[in-house]
Image (cartoon, rainbow, N blue to C red; front, side, top):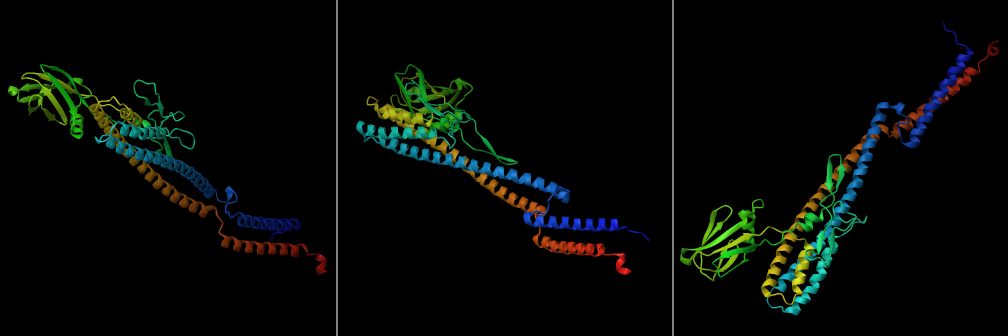
Length: 409
């Protein structure tokens, strides 16, 4: 039989009380903090999972902030593009009015006043800034205006001085979304009206060409213009058939592309081009498909503004100016429409990713809570049990330490 000394009895009793007090203290701390894991040693595996889930939640929080910034940027750009679209539509109406054949010079000058205001509005919108003072459409050169104005320039007065850089914002582990559009692609790289020109003649008294069916000519130009071999853009018209026909050949390719009825001094049409040639049999007229040119929206508006205010401009040249302006505006509206469609798509993706982030956040919070958060019903029940155990240990200790041999003598 093992003998237990008085010191051992005291040590065991005190240790039992201390252990019970420690357990009771832990339960009290769990209830006061709401956390089941007070230290990593309580559940090493669970503690590691909590760390990983917390890191994931912090990352999701940052992605949500990024998403908010992205949507704010896209929505601001959307407003700017919408305002430019409205201004261009108004300008188009004025261009059609100016060419109605009824307005005189004073009427055109009145239209010119409003056209100048629209030009200045569009130019200002093309240089819009965000809340950080950055120029939205300047690409990576966002600290300086996207477009500059030089009234003394002999050429274009409105010029793009940014770049085609775009910013990408990460909104999830696997998703980045473009947060801005470059003014180069939206406003600068807008095709001007496609044209052709007479380059020479032999034996012809006169020859002229103009685009009377722009859509038909645009299609012919797009299908046949050769940006690599310039000679393939050169054509020759030869009067044949006793002066009743013309033959049109592609000089570079050496092929005949059309044979048309012809009356000297009377216009005839070829793929949207109207030719008026006065020439005998055997005469030739050379023409070419002019290279495509690009002109930004402010410059297109400014050119038409100049035509409206030029009292010495011949009527034929004014009609050409209207054609140039209308095609430039229509192409600009198409470019704006494409930019707005792309922007809307990015907004939809951003919203979808944001909703996914919210779902992931809820799932991760639930998983972390299941590991580290206290079950109050269980904790309160355990607290009552520990209180009873502590009271029993204290009572037992008092009884044992109160024993004496003198009580039995």
